[in-house]
Amino acid sequence: MSMILFACVVRARDGLPLSASTDFHFDPDFLECRKKLKALSSILARYPDRSTAHGRDLSIHFHSLGGIACMSICQNSYPAAMAFCFLAELQWKFTTSYDATNVDLAARPYAFLEFDNVIQKVKNRYSYSNCAPTKFDVEKIQEELRLWPPVVVKLEDAELRNGLTNGHIDVHVDSAPAYRLEPVSALGILSLVLNIMCGALNLIRGVHLAEYSFQEDHKGIGNVISFLLPFVACFLLCYLYLFYNSARRIKVFVLFVTICLCNIHLYGLRNIWQIFFHIGVASFSSHQILTRQVAEKQQDFGV
Image (cartoon, rainbow, N blue to C red; front, side, top):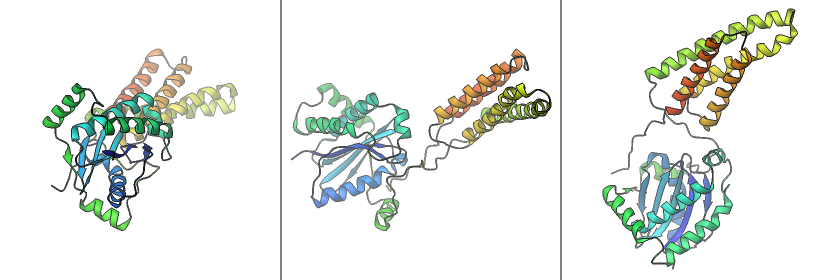
Protein backbone atom coordinates (compact mmCIF):
# COMPACT_ATOMS: atom_id res chain seq x y z
CA MET A 1 0.00 0.00 0.00
CA SER A 2 1.20 3.54 -0.81
CA MET A 3 2.76 5.37 2.14
CA ILE A 4 1.44 8.70 0.79
CA LEU A 5 -2.31 8.37 0.37
CA PHE A 6 -3.22 11.85 -0.82
CA ALA A 7 -1.59 15.16 -1.74
CA CYS A 8 -2.88 18.55 -2.83
CA VAL A 9 -1.86 22.15 -3.48
CA VAL A 10 -4.04 24.91 -2.01
CA ARG A 11 -3.92 28.70 -1.82
CA ALA A 12 -2.62 29.50 1.65
CA ARG A 13 -4.71 32.60 2.37
CA ASP A 14 -8.12 30.97 1.95
CA GLY A 15 -7.60 27.25 1.35
CA LEU A 16 -8.87 27.28 -2.25
CA PRO A 17 -7.79 23.91 -3.75
CA LEU A 18 -5.64 24.39 -6.84
CA SER A 19 -4.66 20.80 -7.69
CA ALA A 20 -4.74 17.34 -6.08
CA SER A 21 -3.73 13.73 -6.62
CA THR A 22 -6.34 11.58 -8.34
CA ASP A 23 -6.39 8.50 -6.10
CA PHE A 24 -9.19 7.81 -3.64
CA HIS A 25 -9.65 5.38 -0.74
CA PHE A 26 -12.84 4.19 0.91
CA ASP A 27 -11.19 3.53 4.26
CA PRO A 28 -13.17 5.38 7.00
CA ASP A 29 -9.97 6.66 8.63
CA PHE A 30 -8.83 8.14 5.32
CA LEU A 31 -12.21 9.77 4.67
CA GLU A 32 -12.16 11.32 8.13
CA CYS A 33 -8.60 12.53 7.57
CA ARG A 34 -9.61 14.09 4.23
CA LYS A 35 -12.40 15.94 6.00
CA LYS A 36 -9.97 17.31 8.58
CA LEU A 37 -7.46 18.24 5.87
CA LYS A 38 -10.12 20.35 4.12
CA ALA A 39 -10.91 22.08 7.40
CA LEU A 40 -7.22 22.76 8.09
CA SER A 41 -6.67 24.15 4.60
CA SER A 42 -9.11 26.98 5.29
CA ILE A 43 -7.17 28.21 8.35
CA LEU A 44 -3.56 27.66 7.25
CA ALA A 45 -2.75 31.34 7.73
CA ARG A 46 -2.74 30.90 11.51
CA TYR A 47 -0.12 28.14 11.49
CA PRO A 48 3.66 28.19 10.83
CA ASP A 49 5.09 27.28 7.44
CA ARG A 50 5.76 23.66 8.37
CA SER A 51 3.27 21.74 10.53
CA THR A 52 1.97 18.24 11.22
CA ALA A 53 -1.32 16.86 12.52
CA HIS A 54 -1.37 13.26 13.80
CA GLY A 55 -4.39 10.98 13.63
CA ARG A 56 -4.78 7.42 14.84
CA ASP A 57 -3.13 5.75 11.83
CA LEU A 58 -2.61 8.67 9.45
CA SER A 59 -0.84 12.03 9.60
CA ILE A 60 -1.41 15.29 7.79
CA HIS A 61 1.74 17.21 6.84
CA PHE A 62 1.62 20.68 5.27
CA HIS A 63 4.19 23.17 4.08
CA SER A 64 3.34 26.81 3.16
CA LEU A 65 5.56 29.11 1.13
CA GLY A 66 4.99 31.98 -1.27
CA GLY A 67 1.22 32.08 -1.01
CA ILE A 68 0.59 28.38 -1.64
CA ALA A 69 0.58 25.34 0.63
CA CYS A 70 1.25 21.71 -0.19
CA MET A 71 -0.57 19.17 1.98
CA SER A 72 -0.39 15.39 2.24
CA ILE A 73 -1.95 12.48 4.09
CA CYS A 74 0.62 9.82 4.97
CA GLN A 75 0.87 6.66 7.01
CA ASN A 76 2.09 7.37 10.55
CA SER A 77 5.07 5.09 9.85
CA TYR A 78 6.22 7.25 6.94
CA PRO A 79 9.27 9.34 7.99
CA ALA A 80 8.52 13.02 8.48
CA ALA A 81 11.71 14.01 6.63
CA MET A 82 10.56 12.09 3.55
CA ALA A 83 7.11 13.64 3.75
CA PHE A 84 8.50 17.18 3.87
CA CYS A 85 10.98 16.35 1.07
CA PHE A 86 7.97 15.32 -0.98
CA LEU A 87 6.09 18.54 -0.13
CA ALA A 88 9.17 20.68 -0.87
CA GLU A 89 9.51 19.14 -4.33
CA LEU A 90 5.82 19.70 -5.05
CA GLN A 91 6.20 23.29 -3.89
CA TRP A 92 9.17 23.85 -6.18
CA LYS A 93 7.51 22.25 -9.21
CA PHE A 94 4.31 24.24 -8.76
CA THR A 95 5.97 27.65 -8.21
CA THR A 96 8.20 27.17 -11.26
CA SER A 97 5.21 26.18 -13.40
CA TYR A 98 2.69 28.88 -12.46
CA ASP A 99 2.86 32.61 -11.90
CA ALA A 100 1.92 33.93 -8.44
CA THR A 101 -0.51 36.41 -10.02
CA ASN A 102 -2.49 33.60 -11.67
CA VAL A 103 -2.69 31.80 -8.33
CA ASP A 104 -3.88 34.94 -6.58
CA LEU A 105 -6.57 35.58 -9.20
CA ALA A 106 -7.87 32.00 -9.31
CA ALA A 107 -11.58 32.01 -8.46
CA ARG A 108 -12.68 28.39 -8.96
CA PRO A 109 -11.48 25.18 -7.27
CA TYR A 110 -8.89 23.06 -9.08
CA ALA A 111 -8.03 25.80 -11.57
CA PHE A 112 -4.67 24.08 -12.25
CA LEU A 113 -6.06 20.65 -13.03
CA GLU A 114 -3.18 19.78 -15.36
CA PHE A 115 -0.81 19.74 -12.37
CA ASP A 116 -2.62 16.66 -11.00
CA ASN A 117 -0.44 14.38 -13.12
CA VAL A 118 2.72 15.94 -11.70
CA ILE A 119 1.47 15.36 -8.15
CA GLN A 120 0.65 11.74 -8.96
CA LYS A 121 4.08 11.04 -10.48
CA VAL A 122 6.01 12.61 -7.60
CA LYS A 123 3.76 10.88 -5.05
CA ASN A 124 4.33 7.47 -6.62
CA ARG A 125 8.08 8.03 -6.70
CA TYR A 126 8.20 8.93 -2.99
CA SER A 127 5.77 6.18 -1.98
CA TYR A 128 7.40 3.23 -3.69
CA SER A 129 11.06 4.16 -4.19
CA ASN A 130 13.64 4.08 -1.42
CA CYS A 131 15.85 6.52 -3.29
CA ALA A 132 13.26 9.07 -4.39
CA PRO A 133 15.15 12.12 -3.06
CA THR A 134 18.93 12.41 -3.00
CA LYS A 135 20.70 11.60 0.23
CA PHE A 136 21.65 15.28 0.56
CA ASP A 137 17.99 16.35 0.36
CA VAL A 138 16.95 13.99 3.13
CA GLU A 139 19.82 15.02 5.38
CA LYS A 140 19.10 18.70 4.74
CA ILE A 141 15.42 18.31 5.66
CA GLN A 142 16.33 16.20 8.71
CA GLU A 143 18.68 18.93 9.91
CA GLU A 144 16.01 21.60 9.38
CA LEU A 145 13.46 19.51 11.27
CA ARG A 146 15.94 19.05 14.11
CA LEU A 147 16.58 22.80 14.37
CA TRP A 148 13.01 23.90 13.66
CA PRO A 149 10.68 20.98 14.33
CA PRO A 150 7.25 21.22 12.70
CA VAL A 151 4.49 22.45 14.96
CA VAL A 152 2.15 19.64 15.98
CA VAL A 153 -1.41 20.77 15.26
CA LYS A 154 -4.16 19.30 17.42
CA LEU A 155 -7.09 18.27 15.28
CA GLU A 156 -9.23 18.62 18.39
CA ASP A 157 -8.59 22.38 18.40
CA ALA A 158 -11.75 23.97 19.79
CA GLU A 159 -12.48 26.27 16.86
CA LEU A 160 -11.74 23.59 14.31
CA ARG A 161 -13.85 21.03 16.17
CA ASN A 162 -16.80 23.42 16.44
CA GLY A 163 -16.54 24.29 12.76
CA LEU A 164 -16.55 20.64 11.76
CA THR A 165 -19.40 19.73 14.09
CA ASN A 166 -21.65 22.60 13.07
CA GLY A 167 -20.70 22.56 9.41
CA HIS A 168 -19.66 26.23 9.39
CA ILE A 169 -16.20 25.86 7.89
CA ASP A 170 -16.14 27.15 4.33
CA VAL A 171 -13.15 25.74 2.51
CA HIS A 172 -13.89 27.06 -0.97
CA VAL A 173 -14.39 30.77 -0.61
CA ASP A 174 -14.04 33.09 -3.58
CA SER A 175 -13.22 36.29 -1.73
CA ALA A 176 -10.18 36.94 0.40
CA PRO A 177 -10.64 36.79 4.16
CA ALA A 178 -10.25 39.94 6.27
CA TYR A 179 -6.55 40.35 6.95
CA ARG A 180 -5.16 42.66 9.60
CA LEU A 181 -2.25 44.79 8.42
CA GLU A 182 0.69 45.97 10.48
CA PRO A 183 0.17 49.21 12.44
CA VAL A 184 0.40 52.43 10.43
CA SER A 185 3.92 53.86 10.53
CA ALA A 186 5.00 57.50 10.61
CA LEU A 187 6.12 57.27 6.98
CA GLY A 188 2.75 55.74 6.15
CA ILE A 189 0.93 58.69 7.71
CA LEU A 190 3.17 61.04 5.73
CA SER A 191 2.30 59.20 2.50
CA LEU A 192 -1.42 59.53 3.30
CA VAL A 193 -1.09 63.29 3.95
CA LEU A 194 0.89 63.84 0.75
CA ASN A 195 -1.58 61.77 -1.26
CA ILE A 196 -4.54 63.74 0.09
CA MET A 197 -2.74 67.00 -0.70
CA CYS A 198 -1.92 65.90 -4.27
CA GLY A 199 -5.47 64.65 -4.75
CA ALA A 200 -6.89 67.96 -3.55
CA LEU A 201 -4.58 69.95 -5.87
CA ASN A 202 -5.60 67.78 -8.82
CA LEU A 203 -9.29 68.21 -7.99
CA ILE A 204 -9.07 72.01 -7.63
CA ARG A 205 -7.10 72.44 -10.88
CA GLY A 206 -9.41 70.02 -12.68
CA VAL A 207 -12.60 71.77 -11.59
CA HIS A 208 -11.28 75.23 -12.55
CA LEU A 209 -10.07 73.96 -15.91
CA ALA A 210 -13.40 72.18 -16.49
CA GLU A 211 -15.33 75.44 -16.01
CA TYR A 212 -13.12 77.16 -18.58
CA SER A 213 -13.12 74.23 -21.01
CA PHE A 214 -16.88 73.76 -21.07
CA GLN A 215 -17.41 77.47 -21.72
CA GLU A 216 -14.64 78.35 -24.18
CA ASP A 217 -12.10 75.64 -25.02
CA HIS A 218 -13.70 72.25 -25.59
CA LYS A 219 -10.31 70.81 -26.62
CA GLY A 220 -9.14 71.12 -23.03
CA ILE A 221 -11.35 68.25 -21.84
CA GLY A 222 -8.35 65.90 -22.13
CA ASN A 223 -6.46 68.04 -19.64
CA VAL A 224 -9.45 68.00 -17.29
CA ILE A 225 -9.42 64.20 -17.38
CA SER A 226 -5.66 64.24 -16.75
CA PHE A 227 -6.30 66.18 -13.53
CA LEU A 228 -9.29 64.18 -12.33
CA LEU A 229 -7.81 60.71 -12.93
CA PRO A 230 -4.84 61.36 -10.59
CA PHE A 231 -7.30 62.76 -8.03
CA VAL A 232 -9.14 59.41 -8.01
CA ALA A 233 -5.86 57.46 -8.10
CA CYS A 234 -4.46 59.33 -5.06
CA PHE A 235 -7.44 58.43 -2.90
CA LEU A 236 -7.40 54.82 -4.14
CA LEU A 237 -3.73 54.63 -3.06
CA CYS A 238 -4.82 55.82 0.39
CA TYR A 239 -7.43 53.07 0.49
CA LEU A 240 -4.93 50.38 -0.56
CA TYR A 241 -2.56 51.51 2.19
CA LEU A 242 -5.22 51.43 4.90
CA PHE A 243 -6.99 48.21 3.94
CA TYR A 244 -5.77 44.83 2.71
CA ASN A 245 -6.77 44.03 -0.86
CA SER A 246 -6.06 41.08 -3.11
CA ALA A 247 -3.68 41.63 -6.05
CA ARG A 248 -2.26 44.74 -4.39
CA ARG A 249 0.80 44.79 -6.64
CA ILE A 250 -1.22 44.93 -9.85
CA LYS A 251 -3.59 47.61 -8.55
CA VAL A 252 -0.76 49.77 -7.20
CA PHE A 253 1.11 49.44 -10.50
CA VAL A 254 -1.95 50.52 -12.52
CA LEU A 255 -2.58 53.54 -10.27
CA PHE A 256 1.09 54.57 -10.31
CA VAL A 257 1.29 54.36 -14.13
CA THR A 258 -1.97 56.35 -14.41
CA ILE A 259 -0.56 59.16 -12.25
CA CYS A 260 2.72 59.20 -14.22
CA LEU A 261 1.06 59.29 -17.65
CA CYS A 262 -1.46 61.96 -16.64
CA ASN A 263 1.25 64.22 -15.19
CA ILE A 264 3.40 63.81 -18.29
CA HIS A 265 0.37 64.78 -20.39
CA LEU A 266 -0.03 67.92 -18.26
CA TYR A 267 3.48 69.19 -19.09
CA GLY A 268 3.00 72.83 -19.89
CA LEU A 269 0.18 73.33 -17.41
CA ARG A 270 2.63 72.09 -14.77
CA ASN A 271 6.35 72.72 -14.66
CA ILE A 272 8.88 69.93 -14.42
CA TRP A 273 9.27 70.27 -10.62
CA GLN A 274 5.54 69.96 -10.02
CA ILE A 275 5.43 66.85 -12.19
CA PHE A 276 8.39 65.35 -10.31
CA PHE A 277 6.66 66.14 -7.00
CA HIS A 278 3.41 64.37 -7.94
CA ILE A 279 5.22 61.34 -9.40
CA GLY A 280 7.53 61.25 -6.37
CA VAL A 281 4.57 61.20 -3.97
CA ALA A 282 2.94 58.41 -6.00
CA SER A 283 6.20 56.43 -5.93
CA PHE A 284 6.61 56.94 -2.17
CA SER A 285 3.00 55.92 -1.50
CA SER A 286 3.30 52.83 -3.70
CA HIS A 287 6.40 51.76 -1.78
CA GLN A 288 4.61 52.20 1.55
CA ILE A 289 1.66 50.11 0.36
CA LEU A 290 3.80 47.24 -0.92
CA THR A 291 6.03 47.14 2.15
CA ARG A 292 3.17 47.18 4.69
CA GLN A 293 2.79 43.50 5.52
CA VAL A 294 -0.03 41.47 6.99
CA ALA A 295 0.31 41.38 10.78
CA GLU A 296 1.32 38.03 12.23
CA LYS A 297 -1.58 36.40 14.01
CA GLN A 298 -1.32 35.18 17.56
CA GLN A 299 -0.62 31.49 17.33
CA ASP A 300 -2.76 29.31 19.51
CA PHE A 301 -2.21 25.64 18.93
CA GLY A 302 -3.98 24.42 22.02
CA VAL A 303 -0.76 23.28 23.67
